Length: 190
Ligand SMILES: [Zn+2]
Image 1: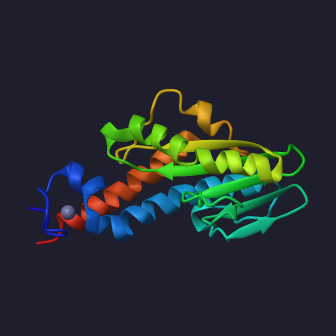
Image 2: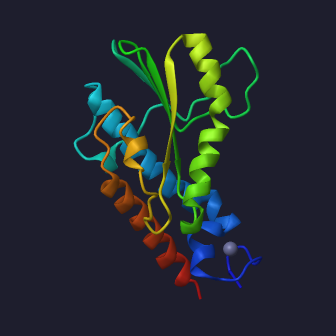
């Protein structure tokens, strides 16, 4: 049995992405590190001053300059009530009149396709509402990487919509290091 939740079999699959107890802090940490990398690359794209190393970057809730506004884990106020109103990152580009809603997920390897569709579906209402309110072309971008680094074929199609130079290998590296850290920790519990 898993010693952390005491509910499920202790399998690698369970430990790296399925444990409800680990989800509370450990998975979130990996998720946030990967999202912070995207935030860092986007800030650089808009010439917003950031640290040289992405892993030292700590995203602020709102960053703004003449060109863009970047929201980090902030609920977006809408006229119509929308439950999924808090994308991981939202990028408003004033010049291009576009808004990109970025949503990151690190699921079990076998769930990467499902998660991608789920994210697109989940934020569709928000996408439509933002287009109407802000009159900006709005796109939801799912960034889904399996806990062991698996990516779905055609993922560049999504990441290329993010303003900034997003290197998929870098995201995979962050996720793998996070997973390795979780495994090292959980498997060493006696
Ligand atoms: Zn567990």
